[in-house]
Length: 121
Image (cartoon, rainbow, N blue to C red; front, side):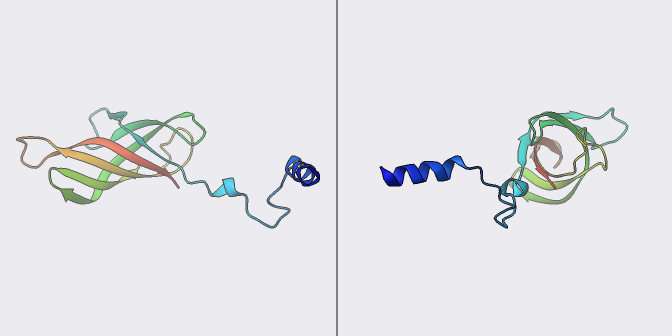
């Protein structure tokens, strides 16, 4: 029982990582999410989309994306990085986007965006 009390006292004291000379572990948390909530823009900008998702603070966020680059083709699917329109995120953050496309049947190799992987920079 004597050792149990020592352990309880140790655990009840708050630990501040900075006083230990250690970087805050929460500062390096990597955030990524997927979204299929993709809406085409007004039609004046071919290939531009709005994407809705919940950000790292669980707040609804919208970004505008455009321009698939460096596509990789795997069967009847395509994977490509997509550019985020600068300063378009509703939360003010920057994101890296990867798009996942499916081939449109009988279209002559046209692809349709199905979902995106969003990573906070």
